[in-house]
Length: 331
Ligand SMILES: [Fe+2]
Image (cartoon, rainbow, N blue to C red; front, top):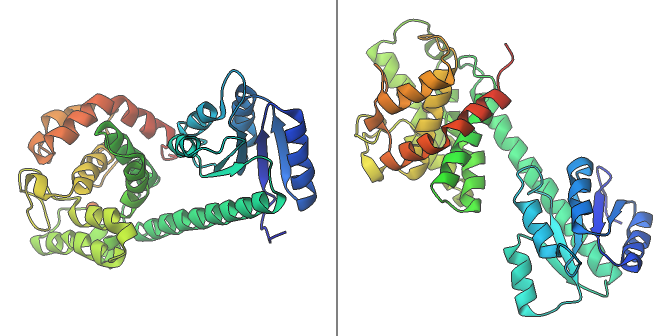
């Protein structure tokens, strides 16, 4: 048995009682907490309340087969990060491809080999823990950057969700959506370099102070650095104040010269800034926020946004309101 920090919960799904009993007899003595389900529908309702760490899923089942169950797990935001191992007598290449297309993390053949299944579970638990640690560290860094900023509350959490909504509406891949949801939270990390008295200044900023604040984009890109896995976060930090008409900073980029991350974050960031209190303005309601983004005010103009991203915002503004309400700051 490998070392575990917490008890790992496993849900086994199979229409065959003997197969389920076999898995239970194998896993329980190894310290796993095991739940069993004999069909897809039961499995889905158990997942909702039990939140397993791993799901062992039989492919051939009556009513709803394993592929369909897997697609439902992966299509639900609350359950999509739970690793799924497909367990089946099917061995063909097509079956493996179908498993991958359904979103399964792994695939093992029946009859189940005890060593093999324990090794796969161990690997997936480690990968899940590493991913959770990675995500946690990114949020910690993003929160550190907010320490001297205005009262930003859950701003970074909402921003990630808005960016994911826009990216999905634009037809981006699931991988891209996942990456921008996470990495966009680092867009203002460069503020770590900006003196607190400038970030917190209540009145109008001097030209020199504005120049200093604008450098948070360059510093952000520098902090995030060159790792290929952070390319989206870096591009977003660098270009989230660039405007489609070329009037933004730090480079005055225009149109599609601006990376798509920057074009998405600017609209998400604008919506959240409008909804919240800022030193220069009171908080506004959803409708006013939509009016300002689509018609403009003294600070924003629709020509600041990529027309395609603006159209995606218009299509999904209801979701923006929902996200704002769900991840609202406590007052
Ligand atoms: Fe910024």
